[in-house]
Length: 386
Image 1 (cartoon, rainbow, N blue to C red):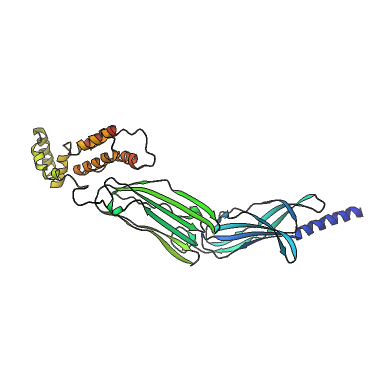
Image 2 (cartoon, helix red, strand yellow; image 1 turned 60 degrees about the vertical axis):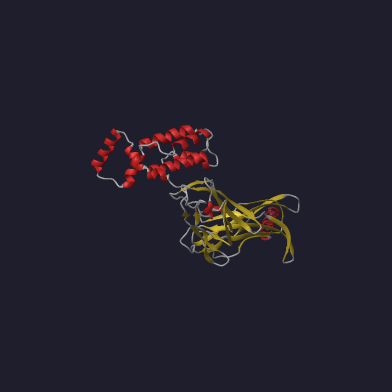
């Protein structure tokens, strides 16, 4: 009985000794971050053990995002004169909301080799740490970084575009010390005068020696509907510089659009058609003249511009031949240009099926079965019905 009690005491003493020769800590580089600011954690274990297997699961929480930013580091190190086995894991933590934040406890399950060659297990626990998270210092979606680079690339000079030329705009945003979903949403560049196609955005987090880098790439294909000069509006988003502790603004500058040579004949309505509309009215048949007279009696005299547009809708138009030729040749840029001129000559807004032609022209992967003559026939029917 005494021997059994002595053995039990020795086993308990051995467990206490093993546990006493292990220590696990959660260290952090600063304790007062703002929302979304990266806090570097180092989970450090000091073990006077020969560890053969280990398992650590960092705790998830709705209060923060986290990512491991380096491989686990196992090494021998002398601590207070004793040679210990050191374990370190690097974690980047990003608070999601302001207020007190508790991280942990963190446990590390170890399988180690005893002096007698047998394996045993122990679990080492690190006490939780507390962070005081401050609100994001701007009325904007939280984005914090130690460095942010915005690159805005254009494939051509937007103020001197050639006829039917498509401008590609590619914007890349890179933020050191952030995650990809922290970066802003794609800006809306749409304008009534602009044909625009957006490519799928590419968003990722890349691990580097300096820390995680969030990257997003936006790309658009842009083309003005007419040659008239216009300006694409500016965009901007706020971000918190964690080095200077200041809110900065990353701008997307405005872009002036225009066609080279605009001002002579390029992109302008058919001037002959504008001058000769009275002759066209005289050439109308008797029945059409009666219809026109009824319209005038029912609604009163129309302004000259409105009357001119109504008269034009009764004619095939000076661009009909150009549209037929372009459709027969499969020349979609020429077809788009002729159709756009025809719409402006008729004074009608672009019908919905213009999007089908634009998609065929500007989309990255256009449908393979597009039939230009069939599209033109549908285009004409839509204009007659309108």
